[in-house]
Amino acid sequence: MSQSIAGASPRGTRTLAPLLATAGIWIGAAVVMVLLPQLFSSGASLTKLCLMGIMIIFALAYNMLLGQTGMLSFGHAVYYGLGGFFAAHAMMIISGDRLPVPLAAVPLVGAVTGLVFGIIFGAASTRRSGTAFAMISLGIVELVAALALVMTGFFGGEQGVSFNRTRALALFGWKFGPQIQVYYLIAAWCLVSMAAMYFITRTPFGRMCLAVRENPERAAFVGYSTQGIRFIAFCLSGLFAGIAGALAAINFEIASNSMLSAQQSGVVLLMTYIGGVGHFAGPIVGAILITLLQSSLSDITGAWQLYFGIMFILVVMFVPGGLAGLITMHGPLARAGLLSRLAGPYLRALVPGLMLVAGCALIIELTYKLTVERAKSSILNLGPLPLDAATATPWIAALVLLVLGVWTLRLMGPGIAEAVSAVRAEAAARAGS
Image 1 (cartoon, rainbow, N blue to C red):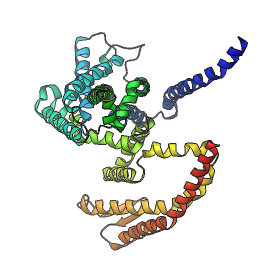
Image 2 (image 1 turned 30 degrees about the vertical axis):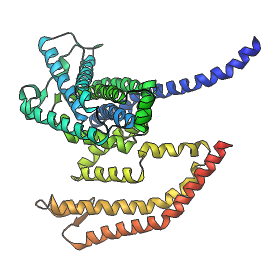
Image 3 (image 1 turned 180 degrees about the vertical axis):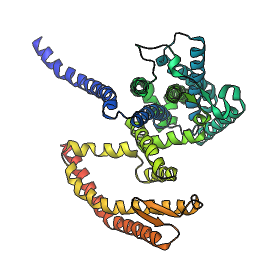
């Protein structure tokens, strides 16, 4: 008997270890969310953190379609926006009739809205896949956006639907007037939504979503309904997108037509692709990065959307796994203790890379000055250095930086690639032994 117990112990330890590691990650995420407002306590920082939490939910919901099931949607803002509008109307009813409903429960209205409209639109759109599904999703978002302009009684026209979130029932004495209280509400829903979507990916249904993405013919051959799996994934994705929309409405105390636009669908597509569609953490990384860049770049330059487009193109062309894939690629190297050997090759690529970025950014800003802002002034202020876009000198400097950066990277690229391949091969050999 003692031998059997001794023999069972290692197996139990191996089974328990992944569960403990997963629990540790989620506990760590909760601790980070609690401590972040203590480190970034300004009003602007709290606003950015709230936006990050909302967009993390939205990007993960979108990734349930794109990353898990392989369904490219151009219209997922429909469920985000409708969730926000129905939550706004629910808040108006709650505040008008003084119903004893706490604000923390209002995102459930967005969840139900996203689920219901996911069922309605998904029943038709998921009958097709690939390009046909993408075009149907684009048609749906344009249809709903057009209806929003006509049905002003519900959507509020250009002014949207506004409300006062403090009129809801207080929860533990919180009226959710201060931004920090709203942050903790969003953080709680973000953590719950993240955990729910993660555990959905670990279920047999989540595995079948991957099978439908990789090989729908084989999934159908073994007896699964590919359309049924796409439909369920679509509905669940709409549910979580509705939660994100309701939280956005609560955060801004308004639901506007911009929440339903194709541009909003494009933003979440950028977040998911740049972060990495093949990894659960990818949309989280993308949502944090794009939200941070949106709030920062928009204050610096009017051409900030162009930078996002260039970033998207570069990621799709050169880093198809996204930023999360790039980080994950270095995991085996770190475990093998070989990550430090890449410091030299990466540092050699840093200087020409910065030259390339600087040259490209300067050309964009000079072009923007001569086109969009020509009526204001042709002077581009780079800190204490004013540059006249109407003269040849800044253009020559920009082209020199761009050409030198490209030429140096092309010259050094093969050597850097060989060094990275050698380190990865050695790490794989160590792992195999």
